[in-house]
Length: 330
Image (cartoon, rainbow, N blue to C red; front, side, top):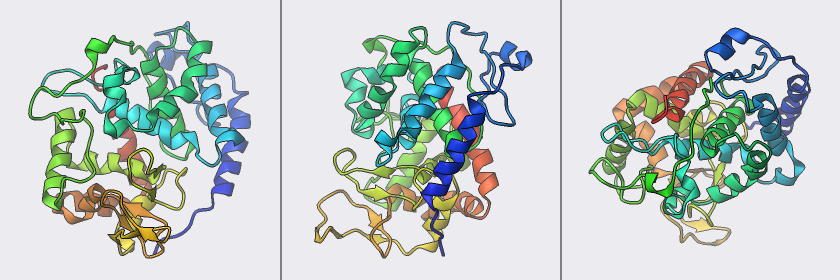
């Protein structure tokens, strides 16, 4: 069966590592010449990015980590939402029309910002606003992607290369529903299309439009190892795992190891939210689009592989996420 992961130990380990992050020197000019920011760890020294020398990426990173570590946000850690912000600001890309993607930050405007899939992300954007003010040469588009990449690494995920240079575009650049491969309420995935077959087809429609295959769809779904749903945002409720600030393959193991049943009650009252599933204790959840990963034969083989191999999951997730945040940019 599944295991519980204690959050206290993870936070202690992360804070211990931060002492190293703040004191490592700047080096590795070769990586800088390629225009890639390498995040700081004991084994990976940060660099200045020559693509935009006016931005102190080391300082930006430290400020993002400081937000994540703040005791003000321990009940709702910002890390998972920073990942979601980077994901949703990039996942609007359409390979057919060459529109959308991470090179715009059009979620700042009411149209995209008000998409149902982006509910709650205004809080994450607000948390990063002070970083933007202190670094005026930093675009929102770069900041949102960089915050997601930093958060993934801070929460135990893979190191993902970051290439800056995204720009902020006007409202006219907001992605719209123009062809059948787009979704009516924006261009992001919908958790439930009524049946397993329809939901699987929808996932492929959305992700294929961006250029992802079945393996990459399943790998990117592993972001649900992080964070939780809120009734005042998506309408759904609960975390996917017992360690919502730890990047691991726990999400996939839970999919296979737990008996998931449709949620009928919440805090002693009938459940009135959208269709979701829960574990026997009622403290974890899965969306219909999560369970499709073990019901669809093609998706299932990749989910099984990741449930068995955490390193393989992180390797494939890192590659898919790097591809995601560069859509429409690199």
